[in-house]
Image 1 (tube, one colour):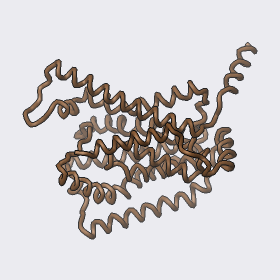
Image 2 (cartoon, one colour; image 1 turned 90 degrees about the vertical axis):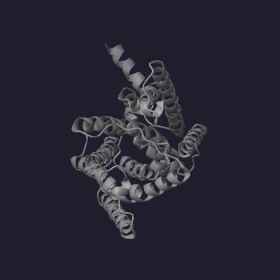
Image 3 (cartoon, one colour; image 1 turned 120 degrees about the horizontal axis):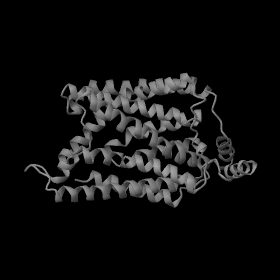
Image 4 (cartoon, one colour; image 1 turned 30 degrees about the vertical axis):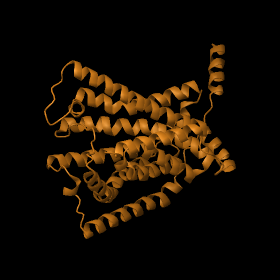
Length: 349
């Protein structure tokens, strides 16, 4: 019995409880390559099955378009990236002998006020930035697409009744919030922070988070959201709070789209007024939102008692010695190049 306990202690001791820059680069590249490869493979298999079964295709459509409307294909396809992110996170910890506690997941020491404010911030971000980014920038992109004859297409789930609302909340709200946070605010941000310092790590991890979406229409808002999520992770040391913020951010977007669908609103230009006063109101709303977030950051988050773990203490010690001394690893550069290439391919007509 004593021998067994000693063996467990030795195994626990052998596991490191911090992330390195190498971890950040390798995990990012693996997540991008595996998710892209699986997406292509699943698409080809689905196309082959649809062709063999002679799936009916209307004259004004094509097989790929009709396949994207099939929920038997659509739902698994939309979960590929999230399943890959979670799998990479789990397998990488096991293979590299990293303690799962390095991510900073803790439910026992949750602060109720921080939990609530995280949820409210997720809601405020959507309400404060969606008019400016989606209404103004989004419509400019849409006009450019129309000018070059390119039709932007997004795979989406039905959202016309309460049943599908809950399916959307689960698949597009809960799952991405958990899987993406474990990867981006867990390993990637943690490794970057140990070599580049806090704010550089926040910016870089947010850029990678935005590029991960591989769509030019989804670059600005994910970058802003990534900065807020990484800042929250840095000051609380508990990844549960970024998960909650991310989750309620997704919930708000889904509920707004549900309301738009109930009112038969198909185009963002029908919602957002693009006159000069409409743009001015959008800018003012974004400024007010920034002020609210800053007040929460300055007068609450900065004074919040950080949940420190051994990994975070070690990271802070390393951080003080190596601020701005790190260089992007080759694996991360490859991942960035790959995501930019996919971004360009998706943008071209």
